[in-house]
Length: 166
Image 1: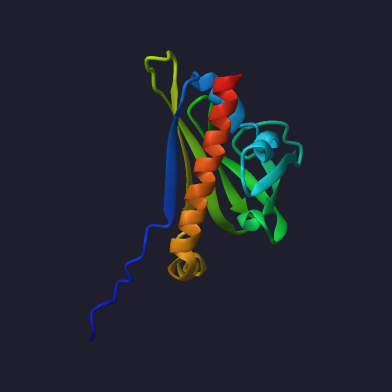
Image 2 (image 1 turned 180 degrees about the horizontal axis):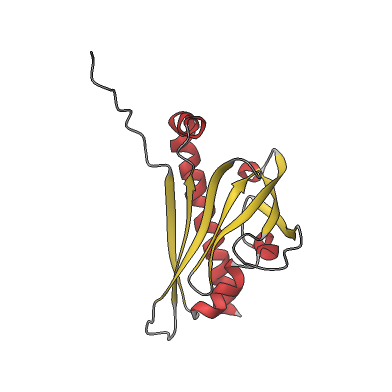
């Protein structure tokens, strides 16, 4: 019998961090307010709370209106908040009620600097490690990973401009 073959894949994750000269409480207001994502994201141009949700809480749901790669196709996604610790972490799963495709989130860490209070903000994504997502990542991972990282950097830089310029 032959030993099992391991397929080495790029991790099904990615992240980008940016320091912002604002306290976690100010940054939290942006990352947890999904209705403002259209101001920052190059792909998701609007979102709204649904199914009775009015703000961030574990289990709250919203739908995001996405223009893939900033050009299309355009579609709505269902999202469910999976982690919500005020001024620390905001994470949500993307998929339907039965299947999650991926997860997105923000981690906030106090980061004082010469400019005063600051926050190191990390935006990240994590694909579900099921067979369809592994195959997707094997074929399109390098390209999509770069696109995601560029989009996260754009999102964070746009947020930074808002919190630092007031």
